[in-house]
Figure 1 (cartoon, one colour):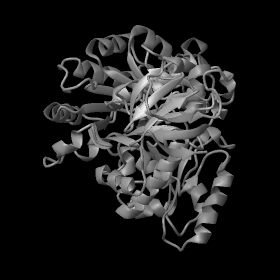
Figure 2 (cartoon, rainbow, N blue to C red; figure 1 turned 45 degrees about the horizontal axis):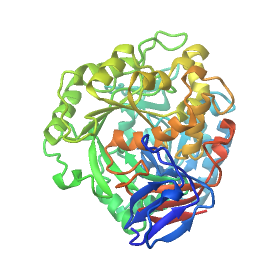
Figure 3 (cartoon, rainbow, N blue to C red; figure 1 turned 180 degrees about the vertical axis):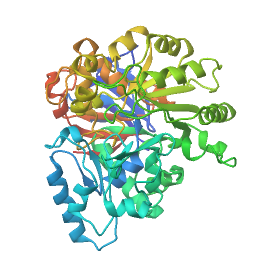
Length: 532
């Protein structure tokens, strides 16, 4: 953190502070902002002046829903997305390339596949993957992170056969003869996940530190880690990464389905201190799946079917999660895409009094595809929060059109309606669980919110578009508030000097060019930690 007294001048500063939204200069002392305003009004003092050269300045982005530890590891795996892979045939070639570089029996992993983006317009299966490699296990994670595809070798190692029953809250896809196709959905993933070879803690820390540099280049200065696909604890991991140069502030959530049957599971009290760079924010539950995988538990059936999706959490697990959060006064998060899941959790926690001891919402719901009117009303009344991802419609439009149809797709993620009614709402990416080559990039996500168009130009419901200023506030001030971060997300006196300088003026470029905006410099605690 800087110990200098700096005056940043000649800037176009957007503060996200509604009481002082635009400024030209700010003073930073010991990493904390002490004054923001017009340059002519700047208090006299012995400051080192930094010329912002007329550039647009924003608070650092706060991505309130990511899976950074997963994203860090996946950066070293096969990306099954454009511009790397456009078809199953190209995917097979990538698998062959990896196999040629390693010995038999070693795992080959990939991430991000989306059948809607493949030229074949279908999901890969075990037989496709066998063409790439048959003597080593192949494991591909779908873009939604709720579905995996395995080759025959991996199925054999997991003991998944024609006779294997579907686990509770999961499904094994089968062909017309009842044979597993290689696609495992939701809780069925646990049949194989325990077989994946673990990385050492030091290897993981290196990967997270590397990811931190990418996030800084994208202007992201704080993140929420919304849990792993295993019971590992990321708290020590981030401290190890911080020793290797990781700069972001982190709120950590524990995936409850791995802990609810463990009577000895505890989160040490000291980890809840939000004044630390890295703190424990609460626990995360999984209520359903994804729209793109047809496993989100919806109020209405999917297009041309009688399928409503899957509920993936038992009453016992949900009740134990609530009890844990009440005991430790920490936040409860639930993955809730479909309307039935949203209603289920909202109606249950509506009966409770607020259990967090600060301004942090005691319940936050993730994704929020089709919230009902009554869920919105109860959420506003009780002060719950919603974290949604505009990148989903932007990047995964093929799956939405296929599973919901064009008209229903336009009504999903009703951001503007929720804001007008007063919902505490924020933006995030859910990286890497979305179909985008660089999934943590905030700018395509913001573009999707402002244009309400997909990357291919498909209309996603213009009446739910928001203006660029609102989008930035939802990615900074609102995200910090939803996650419970202290004194970040705004450029105002008393707040940490976490800010970014942009190459172009995000607030004035044509909306179709928002995704072309880049970050020129990133500051954390008044220290420049990235420069393009």
